Structures are given as C-alpha cells and as structure tokens.
Length: 625
Ligand SMILES: O=C1O[C@H]([C@@H](O)CO)C(O)=C1O
Image 1 (spheres, rainbow, N blue to C red):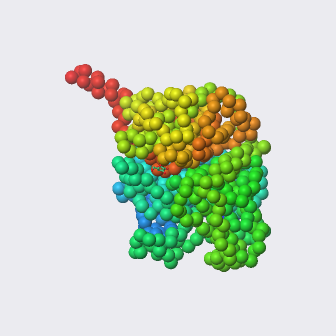
Image 2: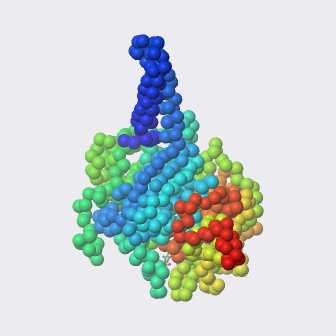
Image 3: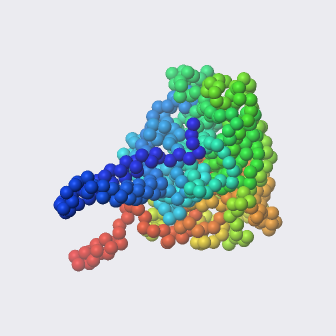
C-alpha cells in the first residue's frame, strides 16, 4: 500500500553523514593525540572530542537531508521492447523496462534531474514535462523542434528543471508520434512540509488512462502523410495504467501475436481498504480518444485539475481529454464483500473501441475476483451536453483563486478547420497548417538564425471571420503549410479563442484538447456556435475561473483562454490528439526570448552555431591573406 507521500529513504544521507563524521572524528582524534602528548590517557582524549563528533554528525546529516530533499535524480534508459499490454504483442517504448514509466515523486521546489539515455537504436527522442512551466529553463521543456534538438540514438541527455507548484502532472515523448508507443508517465508534486491541501484523504495514487493501437507509429504517420490519406482509425483497446484487454478472437488478428492468457494483460487492480478515502490522480494521455472514467457504484469528488484546486463537485463519471489531469476523492464505502469495475469508455466519436476494464478491489477479497455485475456501459458517446456541463462546473476553489486580469491586450481567434493541401488532409489554424522547423525556434531566435523558419507571422484571425460558416465543410481557400510563429509582447495579457467548426465531412465537428506549454491559462468561457467578439466577452467568468494547461473545445463551440505572456521562451500550443498535431493542428508563441539566459549546448545537437568571435577572427584572417 502506498503512503500519502513517498520520498527516497533517508538511509543514504544517514550513511553518508555517519561516514563523513567518523572520518573527521578519526582525523581530529589522531591529530589531537599527536599534538597533545601531555594527555596520557587516550580514552579521555577521545571522550573530549565526543561532543564535536555529535555536532558534526548532526550538521552533516541536516545538510545532506536538505540537499536530498531538493534534488531528485533519475537515470532512465529508453528503448523498444516487445510487450503485450492488451494481450497483443508489439514494440513498445519503455523507460527502464516499463510502460508507463516510473512515477516522478517530488515536493514543491525540488529540482528534477533526469539523465535520459536513448537506446532506441535508430530513432531520436525528446521528453516533455507536461504541466511544468519551466520558469527560467525553457530549454528543458522537451519539445523537439521548439525548445531542443532531438536526442540521438546512443546519446544521454540531461533534463534539469524545478517543479515549482504542487499538483498532478505528466511526462511523455514529444518527438513524432512516439507518445502513443508507450513513452509516458506521471509526475506527482507534494506540497511543502507543513502546508495542507483543502481536502483530506488517506492514500494517494496515480493512474494514467490511454488508448492503444496495434499498428506502429511509423505506419500511422506514413498513412497520415500519404495521398490518398489513410486515417489511423479507432484504437484497438483502452489501457488503465498500461493494462488492457484486446479480444484475441477478433477476426483478422494474427493468432501468433495475441495471447489471451499472457499475464501482462491481466486487468489493472486498484486495491482499497473499506472505509478509507483515496485521492486518485487521473491523467489521460490518449492518442485520440476522449474518455469517460467511472468506478462502478462509487461517486467521485473532483478536487484538483492540472495543478489547481477546484471548487469540489461530485460526478458519477469523469470526462477527461488527452493531456488533462484530475484528482478525485473516492471513498471505499460500498458493500466490502465484493469487487467493482473501473471503466474507461471512448466518447465524442462514434467508435468501435471496447471499454477498458480494471478492478476496484476491496481488501481482503481476492485481487482478480471478477465483480458479480455486468460492467457499467458508460454514457452515450454523443452526449455533448453532459461533457460541456462538466467543463462549466470546473471553477477555482474559493480559497485558491488566482485573480484574472480583467482586460486583455490582444485577442487571437484561432479557427480550427480541416483542409486539403496538395491532396493530403491537414488540420489548419486560421488556414495555416503548422509544420515544425528543423532548427528549434528557441535556438534560432537566441542565435539570430532567422532564415530557419518563415518570418511572416500567422494571422490573429482569418479574413472574413464574421462571414465564415462553421456549420459546413471548409471551402478550403488559402490553406497553406507554415512554420511561422506568434510573437507576443512580453508581460501582456493575451486572449485565445479556440473556434471549432465542421470538418471535411458533413455534419461533423470533433472535440480537440488544446495544451499550452510554459503556462497555465484561465479558462474564461465556453460557448456554443460562432464566437461573437462584441457580445461573448461580456459572459466571461472573470471571478473564479479555473487555471489549466489543457482544455477542450467542444464540437461546433468555442473556448476562451486568457494568459499573461510572462515566461521568457518559446512555447508550443497544440491539439493533444497525436495525429491532429502531426497533421498541423498547432501554433507556437514566443515571448521575452531576449530574457532567456545562455542556452545549454546540449540542446543544440542539430544546429551548427558559429560563434560570432570565431567569425570575426576568420574575417580578419581572410582580410590579412
Ligand atoms: O483528422 C481526422 O481525419 C479523419 C477524417 O476526418 C478524415 O478521414 C478523422 O476522423 C479525424 O479526426
């Protein structure tokens, strides 16, 4: 059973302090023995030094403990391994042999150091620390093409950053579509000693919900880039903390690859002690699916999202979108003589993916005892109203309101459409389908390599926005691909309006979870239909909006966000659906890049930066020739 807080055992500092103290003690006694030959009794001589020894021990121990509490050091090896998380054998990207990878457990203010060895043989990698704002360390955000060059096979890269706020966060690959191959995990940051949460619980657990495809990320990416376009389709299964169950008798399944009795695909078991309350930290890192999660017969009280306390509200099922995290409190207050189902279900798209099932196990019932009931079937996939209602229910906890600026300096309306460019299906934002540059923006901007990306910024809104009909397939005018970015004036307040619309298919609009790097934003409003720039801002919640880093825009609706551009760096903002970002559904913001300190050379593996003084020496040299 996990304890509410888990930190590395104190044995290392104690041993270190003891040995250091003993060493100094021996040194002192030895030298005092030599210099005070008059004290004939060596025992008395040693006793005289005992208080010094104790003081030394305590001093070194406390220094050690302070250092230990502030730096969490991890050594990770990333590689491909054959695994069967849902009974179907495929190549999975693991960290130290595991997917999900190890949970990072830290306390607010700690420094996290991850030495990441890329053992993928022929593939690059980068890891993003999702929800960590990277204040002062924008180069550690782990976004390939934006903040760093990829980590090459065989290389070891050090990520070093501070977790400055307690809460529930995630980490995952941010290179190509690698995240969905299994490279992800949880980050749990505890409050500083002596500070209390605004709710009580007995135990703290993290789980990640995911969807799972049997085809490789390469096959999927190649399909998305092909003409004719090949869509990735529905996921084959849903995983709860890396465990799922695919039906091996599904027609077309290679029998040699699917083994229903493989212990790797036993259901995830969540063991609870009757009467106890659990803080369940739920994160979603699906490639595509919006999910509903529920525990049969148990209510869940939502208390935190993306590192911010929520005015508590009770749900039977929690809607969660890729990139979001929630803490819910669940009390084991039902009939303790049986087990219950935990169910994740794909919603918001009509789909063929079977529900993911786990077991909510009441101790001391056997872990694998199937609940005596049929698993709950979950909500209708197309119940948009229920999902919008949950979005509207999420407000800041009254005692933890971060006051929102009452006005903004700039409004950017981002129209989300699907388009066809050169025969390929793409996603576009204001008719621009985003592509990543080869040279990461952070490096280009700091080193003035402005030829490495397109300099005309994308538009703040489309021409003729008022006339645009969001209810029909886009007319596909002026859609282009570009790697240009938005440059935000430092310290200004920016409103982003995410405007949803019809896809290329008639009568279809999808849900997109948008994630902002380097910031939390206030979610100031949601609306149905087309955003009205003169009327809708009057309906904004400027009293107690929640702050988040990922938020959905619902079908045919809009979502309004506000943030202050006060974190020097270059930050990606994109749909967290893996294939949608790959198809261009993203943007990048730059702010205060001139304030960013000297970049570490470790992020620059793909760039040849010729130092200015070297250039001038060479010029001099040529001149003299
Ligand atoms: O990006 C997408 O492409 C397909 C479809 O719209 C084109 O076939 C789909 O369902 C998406 O979400």
